[in-house]
Image (cartoon, rainbow, N blue to C red; front, side, top):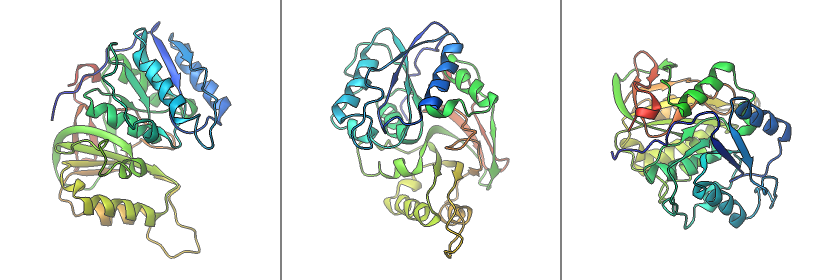
Length: 305
C-alpha cells in the first residue's frame, strides 16, 4: 500500500473554499449554521459564486461544478475545501479529472455521502481527505463530533471509536471510509482503489434491507470483499422495510452478507448520515479490534502516512 500524503494541518486564519460538487443546495439555514462553526474557529471561508446554481437535481452543470472544484484545488492560498452537501453528482465531474493538474500544496477535502467518490479518487492520487460532516449537517453534530473534525484537520490525535465487535481478532490496515451506495457504484471503475490491506468503513441511509443485500452481494460477487482485511460499519439509519412487507432487518442482512468473511468486523460505530458522524481521515493506518469492538487511530492524522 503506497504512502498517502496528508495535507498540512489547518490553523485559524487559513483560507477555506466552499464548493457544491453534487446535489443542489436546499438546506440554506443548515448551510449557514455550518459556515458559522468554521468561521467561529477563526477560519476565512470563501463561498463559490455558483454555490446555489441548479441544473435539475444537480448543483449546476457538470462543467460548472468541475470548475468550482478546479478553482479551489488550484488556488495556492486555499488550505481546505468544504463541501456544501451530498446528494448525487460528484462522479459526473470525475470524468477526465486529474488531481495532479495543480501546482499548489495538497489541501484538505472534507465531506461524506456522495463526496465518497471525490475522497476515493483523491486517495488513488495519493492524498488523504476526511470523511466528515458536510456544511449542511455539521451544526447538528454533538460537540465531541465537531471537536473531532477539527482535531482531524488540525493534527491532533483522535480518540478510538467504540462499536459492537463481531470477533475475528485484531488487524492493522489502511482506513477507507465511504457510503455503501456510492462505493458500490464505483466497482469496476477507475475510481475504485486497490483494496489489499484496506479496512473498509461503510455507512448508509434510507436504503431498504433488500437493497443493502443487493449491494453487498455485488461486492461479494465482484471479489472486492476478499481483498479487504477488516470492515468497520457505521450507521445504517432509516433502512427499515415497510411494516407491511416481509423482510429481514438491515442488521440481519449485514450479518448474513459479511459475517462469514473471516475477518475482523465491528458494527454500530458512530459515523454516518444521522448524527453523530465521527470524522474519519482517509488513508491513515488504523487498528480494528473485532473482539473488543474498537476502531483506533494510533497516531495523529497529521503524522500518518
